[in-house]
Length: 412
Image: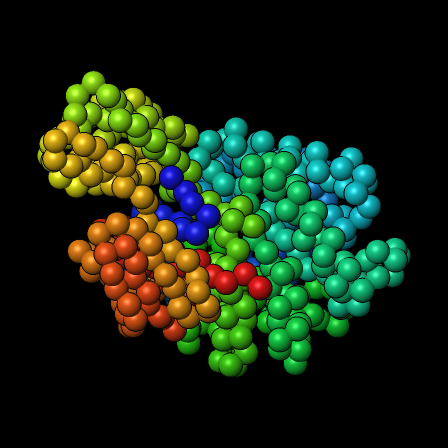
């Protein structure tokens, strides 16, 4: 049950300190092979304690269409069950007129994505949102500056991803952020198009955060030969641009493809009787834990509670992972039953949040960063139904009554 102000994070253990491993195929052209972007990602992930196994098919100047006509591209796609296949078009093609993109880019980008899903149903296609050229592209007024070209690339890649049930690694958006906040960092080589080492390090950082769904730690040992201050600026940009807009970029971790949503209503047959229904995707098993030592199986179940308060948890499992949804049920005396309101979190300002719910004063509240490290949290007000607290960062998880929530942010 997802509400606008709160995101329940599943598989919190995957955000901890344990090593994660991903298999990633890059399909693209010179923007991908310049400075060995796949290899840079491998080394960055290793510095974070994770592992990325990569392969690539990157011919200079290749468009989406060219890849669909290349047998080797399909051989690479079918070589194994990839977690992610990253797809990049020719640097200009997504910025061209809308109808031209519709006929010359989108169908072929979608064809590649369909081939990925046909090879492995749990794979994720991730489009490489590239950047505008340093001074734009003079051949057309609508892309003759960096900002115009960058905006068109952003919109086109999001549209392509939406049409392909895919996600986007927003390298171009991080590129813009660095140009605006750290203009002294040179992201281009002399042609004003291809990436410098700093540009490739920024791209690799965006891919790490996009694929692993966690922030890169500060003061990372691996800097690709850049000075530590420059590397940190690039890392900060990747963390901010990706993690503040996960929904915008349509990013889904491979172990989160299975989704489940639970609804409940009082059954009316017996006091304390409820009917539960689960709607799930990519699942073939549903298990219920009613919080009173009773369990059940199946998409629709009925359970009778005695007086008390219970957390009902539904776990859906399938070939692409697991998902969990839960709710609180309170059954009063004399057979009176009520569904308790769900917990929600509201951002009051950039460092202050309000939690609303029921019986909150019974629970301990803790905060963690995305690597699993505990953070110092300042409680400002606590009552039965609300908690107000402050924290120095919005990149955090809140643990309350055994459940984890990602902090919402103020939208300017």
